Length: 442
Image 1: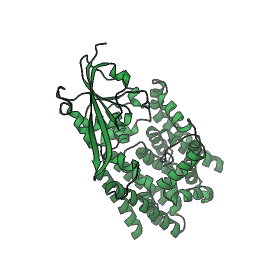
Image 2: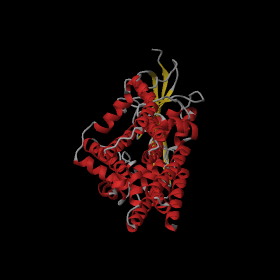
Image 3: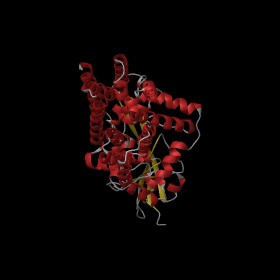
Image 4: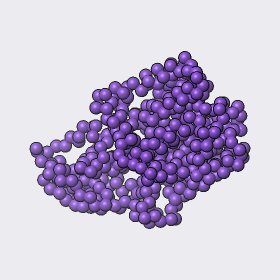
């Protein structure tokens, strides 16, 4: 029990240190932009993360969802094993597993999805059909892959050759919660569904992308939790078949997707909720080794993000979480370019990530432009309303000039001016800013 308390406290401490010691990064500011334009759907995901950010703020959303997810893991494990001791072991595992740390620090759709997936799985296990319908519906409002929890339940029902009548009530309530998202997609040319299908199953893959998926799981779940999750799914107790399917279905589905396209390591994150509960019931040395191996990885990553010692040629983690504050200077363009009218101006960027960072740190209107940009929610929103003669800024990284189609709309181009983002004497970002002067009347 002392070890469990230490691990839970360690997980909370790491979350707070990262929440206070890192910058808000582009995924979070992208969803923060959504929160400023509340709707029933968005280009990439359903709306729940935006609603929560609007109510709780960026880091408040992640931290509270993380605490709630831990409480749900504890409660489900207690009911599964009838033991508070095992419940504490499950919570200690989830507290230090890297994917649990990430979802409890940075506000992405995974944060509410994991919370309501855990609550939905708990309600399904206890056959609380109304509660299951509401929580599963909220999980669907967080992220489309939450439908995999329903698939896991159906596999368990087929295994037991029993489909309780209350399960139909659960399905009806969940679909009723999700119906506004379907209607929003129908009114927007099904952009959300189309993007996710193409993003998850389109493109080209093979053994290389599947190998990257496996490596990602060994990092996100820890070197032991991922293989133990597979072992639990295959050889776990018969009476825990629902939890076993809740672990294996996301891993199998996204493993298949990884063989078709390059995916992201966090996609099967929900699998590790049930896996932590399964490992908590295994022999003590598996629990101990899994927990401390996860804790070591989480501490190593957190230490690098807060006090980096090692140097990497392309440090993605450090550049995502630090060095964005120089974008604040875009709120006062007259300090960058002589002759510009004091006050906020519109800023264009080549990607939704940078446009969102500029909007958050500078507090200005932003939009994306350029043929190489990935389509995003900015393509769903109406374009910026500009007046003839108005000046705007173009902001990019590493010297990318404004695209020709944007330049042609203005009378002059001036720049670039460089803004550099450093962290502990390391150069992480070099932003280049151009002034596009005098928008043409036509």
